[in-house]
Structures are given as structure tokens and as C-alpha cells.
Amino acid sequence: MDQVPAGEPVLAGTFTVNGHPAVVLFDSGATHTFLSKSYALKHGIKILSHHRTGFPCRHWVNGQTIVDIGPENFVINPVVLPHQGIDVILGMNWMVENDAILHVGSREVQLKSKVTGKILKVHIPEQKHLEATVNTSELQEIRKIPVVCDFPDVFPEELPGLPPDRDVEFKIDLIPGTAPVSWRPYRMAPDELKELKTQLQEQLDKGFIRPSSSPWGCPALFVEKKDQGGKRLCVDYRPLNAITIKNKYPLPHIDICRGYYQIKIGEEDIPKTTFSTVYGLYEYLVMSFGLTNAPAFFMYMMNSVFMNELDKFVVVFIDDILVYSKNEEEHEDHLRTVLTR
Image 1 (spheres, rainbow, N blue to C red):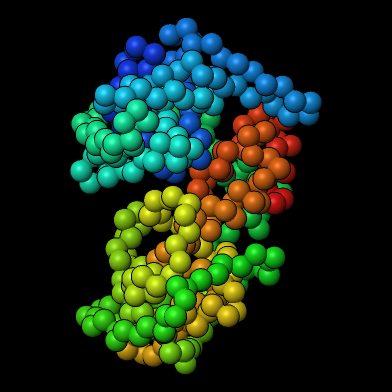
Image 2: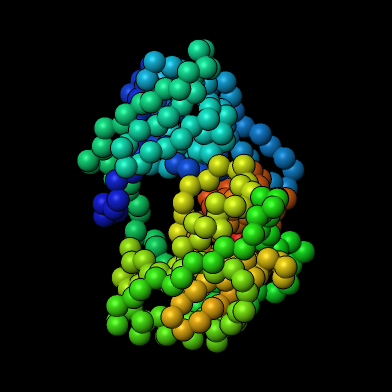
């Protein structure tokens, strides 16, 4: 068993669950709430099972698990999974139900009291030694897994170009009566201008963008890539987002740029994505990072694609897909189903 290297601080703390200390993670990237199987067995929490012919058994806890957070207690109905290191994961279903807002910088969780209706703010001390354990003895390169070898097109190093036409496209609905907004390009240093030329050409070659003569225009800028280093071309869409009708689905800011590029923008909304540079105007044909409703639409698309499999053998974590099965043979069938979507 190897230790996963520590990364950015996570919003996790020690709370009581059914009167016992538990490590609780607030995870806005999880669609559901989860309970560690080992924690449930250790503290006598009854695990229920649901069998459906042709599908794996689903385990969960129903109405007998209480998490104490600040002065309030919350009943949860978690799915039971054999994860380690974290006892409880409070996902989006719990956050929506309790109007929870995460403030990662100040390490606070804002909740609405079901008793008084008042807003509660709970500070979460940093877990300095919180680590997850992973069995690395059986890890394989993804391309060496037999099932994956049958689907080489699903795992490209780079997206080859425009995604195929689909029934649903990303829309940008504006507040009635708004007019096009246009901002001048931001100034860039010489090295940034060189990188701008390179990335513009790459996106033009792949068909992700095209030259524009739109009256719209938001300024382009670069942000640092946290994981790989280098710079990512982004657009400051704040002027456009300010006049866009917001999707009510609560989601965090997430970094799934390549996932966005797999979703086309509706033809009538393409001009609204126009961004300004010193080399001219360009507009996106695919969903761009920074658009206000993009995360919620991406989550909607993921859930739509796997609607028939959700909670049967698939759980979606924004752009990550968990496939769970009773045995290896069944898991291979489930993987094939997912990879053909």
C-alpha cells in the first residue's frame, strides 16, 4: 500500500457520525453522499442491499445515520462504498438539500438551519495529515487493460477536432433587452504574444475556433496550468456572464477544459463567445472554459449520457466516471457498456 502524495488542502474535518468521530469530506464534485463500508461495520450501522436482476447489488444506509455539524445534526442516506481514508463524503445531493455553500479559502461551510431557517457558518480546521491509501501493486497502464485495448479512440492523447453533431447543444440565453458587449484586448508581454499565436493556430487547426466579425468581444488572457505547467488560453467572460440567465444547478468552478471541447455551441450563440486579441477577433464553436452555465450543462450532459446506468453500476463525479461491479466478469461487461456511450 502506497501513500498518495499530499496535494491541495481539501475541505474535510472530524465530526461525529452517530456519536462516533469520523473524517467527513465536503465534496462538490461528488453527485451522491457516501459512507465507508469499514466505518459502517465498525460502528454497527446497518447496511441495506437492493437487488435488481441483471444489475449489481447496491448498498446504502437509510435514515439511521446522523452527522453533527456545528449546532445542527443532519440525517443522511449514503451509498456504501469500500473507500479508505475518508469515512463520509457529503456530495451534491446533500449540499442542494441543505443549501450548503463551500468557502474553500476560509475553510467554511455555510448551511441553512432546518430548525431556525438562519444561516450557519461552520469553520473546518485543516487536516494536515489527511491522506488516502491506494493499492499500487496491481495498478496497470490504462492502455494495457484488455477492455481498453478494444476502444483506442476513447482515450486519445489530444482531441482530434470538432465533436460530432448531437441533439443537444450549449445555449447562451441572455437577459431580455441586453445589447452586445465588447471589451478591448488585454495587454500581453512579448512571450505571451508568442504563446497566443501558437495556441490560436492550434485551436484554428482543430476547428475549435474561427475568425469572427461579431459585435461581441471579451478579452483573452492566460492562466497558469497547475498540474502540467505552462499557460492556458482563456477568455474573461465576466461581461457576457453578467447578462446571461444563470442555470440554477449549483456547481463549483471546475477545470475540465478538454471535456468542454467535446460539446458544440448552438450556431446562433457562437457570436456571443467572441474573444478579442491583438491579432483579431475569434469565436468558439465548442463550449469554452469560463462561460457561466458551462459546468452545469456539462454535468447535465454526463448524467444524460449515463441516465440508464446511474446508480446501477455507474456514479458520475463531474468529469470522472466510477464503474462498480460484483465481480471481474461483470465489470468487463459494464466497462464495455460505458465505453460505447
